[in-house]
Image (cartoon, rainbow, N blue to C red; front, side):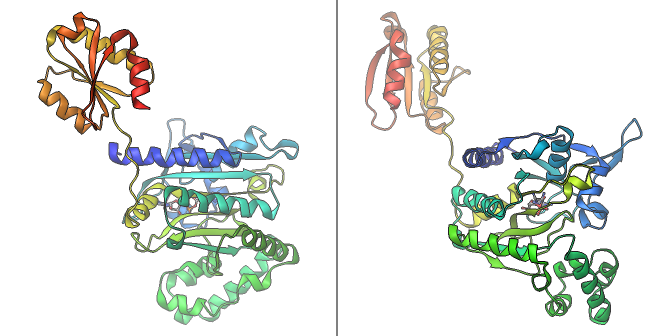
Amino acid sequence: MLPDVARAWEHLQRTAQELFARYGYEPIYTPLFEHTEVFTRGIGEATDIVSKEMYTFEDKGGRSITLRPEGTASVVRSALEHSLTANGAQAKLYYAGPMFRYERPQKGRMRQFWQIGIEFLGAPEPTADAEVITVLVRFFEALGLPRESMRLLLNTMGDEHCRPVYRDEIAAFIRAHADGLCEECQRRAETNPLRAFDCKNPGCREIMAEAPILRDRLCDDCAAHYAAVKSHLDALGINYIEDPSLVRGLDYYTRTVFEIQVDAGLGSQNAIGGGGRYDRLMQEYGGPATPGLGFALGFERTLLALEAAGIEIPALPRADVYVARVDDTVTDAAFALAQALRDAGIATELDHQGRSLKSQFKQADRLGARFVAVVGPDELAAGAFTLRNMGTKEETRVALSDAPAAVTAALG
Ligand code: HAM
């Protein structure tokens, strides 16, 4: 990431930190790699991520290691290992960093990409679902993405009571319609039938549109939870579209799943963020039953969506003040002045190369400096320098001893 892009990444992280803190989330950093089993168990053997996309290798100790393809599995593994949710405690955690998936690269899809995510552990209530979904919507809004340009899709995956029965029903449906379905979907009947809803093949989509939907097969508890999530979202004024074909690519989901898609700027990789509930994940790792939910959003796709919406990442000025020196005799004084301003918290730049005064002013302009502090031998003899406002061209004489206070006041 070159500075332009890195600056955007930092802007997204700052926006996330400020927003997530308002909801009580704390930072967590997990390793870039884990024992492979953390992902195979958590994300599921039959998913595309685990079966095709992981960067897995053996380390010198003969252990199977995998570069993290996402953050949830690591956060839950870590929460269990460090008892963050012991005795019914809740944990609200957020993370940001690179993830790795061996996918076919295309626009908005890379092999190393950056995610920001949150995980809310120990929260079974549907209000938690509505809150997490709202944080995701508000994040994109905070970046300036218009609400009309985003589509929030919502679905439910049921739980261990209703999903297996439905899974079998879909497997049978796929077998009964095998003739019209692609080979991959036919295979899915045996491995991961619900993923057939996600097939991009138009023929498959047409057939799967006729398949029974899980929403009509939910057990009472899942139906009540789903209804409550929708009513809480309604109460908050968060618009959503119910999409029974939204199944998401990770096996740990139970009940609520959601995704935010945009049309402009992204082609087929149009999901900028997504997530859901995973009430059984901690048990998969041998821990106590602990509900959880969260989301992750992709940095590169978010950037493409912002670009398409014409939203610029605000540029931070590289320097508020530029210290220009008239000649070499004032170098030490100019350098000391720059340091005093920097120590006072003012972004200050100065010339290291002995450029002419004219090109120092040009450089000050390029950096976006609002003031230039001109240090020359005559003024220096009187213990002062000239402060020039680059906007109004107004010049004032300032005593060196007053510099930090005077410049701070001038900057306003
Ligand atoms: P995911 O949908 O796999 O979910 O990824 C979340 C976001 O990461 C996507 O919406 C997309 O913006 C971005 N993304 C995924 N793969 C790529 C790629 N190859 N290139 C660029 N961007 C990509 C998860 O990862 C879950 N851990 C989300 C979650 C958190 N669920 C519960 N908690």
